[in-house]
Image: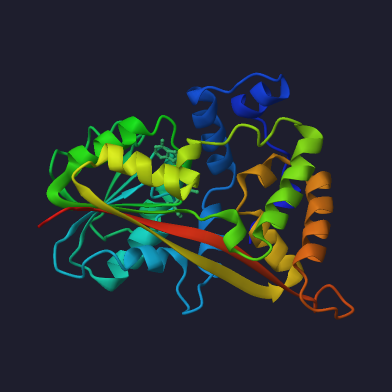
Length: 306
Ligand SMILES: C[S@@+](CC[C@H](N)C(=O)[O-])C[C@H]1O[C@@H](n2cnc3c(N)ncnc32)[C@H](O)[C@@H]1O
């Protein structure tokens, strides 16, 4: 696990705008995401891999189930980050034709290392402009935990529609409804309360387009972007258990907000979070066990073939 407590807090054009009570624009969002991912490359997968649903699947595995296991299916992982999903797909079927896009070069460098000699093509690009990918050339576009961050979202969906074949599918793993995972809202509120002590308006404006976070608004958005398709949104909950300090570090590591905290403040937050997540009362912290649960949703857009 990365020792984020040894690093400075994080400043970006986004945090600077919020501190000055200004509304951050699209460039501020890009700058913030790049700053976080440059400093904490690969952070998403630690939490996402550790959390499993009641039948033992993590969120990458749940999303990967939607990829047909036939030979030479053409897959694009949109905002692939450090490449855990692509690696999982490659290990499962070496004949898949894999492509990954991300706007953060540091994340892509990690993905390239882990997928060396796999034949995967990587592109540093924003999801709003996929000019490196030809029209009608992809059978399934996947997007794991990144759609929520994209603003503007309309050009992203236009690009997804353009690169997909007429029978192609779009599948995304996004945040679920907060109240569907026990204790998740309390974790969210605790982390945000620490961040808001430093930047009072943090959280009033979401990273990305808020419509992706609600199932009704997500469904409306997708019906508009893909009018001839069937849209389904399924809910699930993934959890992890372990020594409580470790669970608290991994859970906090999943919240972009937590990276904004200075090291001293972050330590205090982790202590409070450990108390919140504890499920046993053993005397030493090393032995105390903790549990963290997270709501997730799986979106599938597929052509309406009658
Ligand atoms: C939370 S991480 C998820 C990474 C990876 N999909 C995973 O689940 O491990 C979000 C990723 O989205 C990328 N990203 C965010 N907005 C993007 C955009 N507009 N275009 C391309 N990549 C974007 C970030 O660079 C980052 O790698």
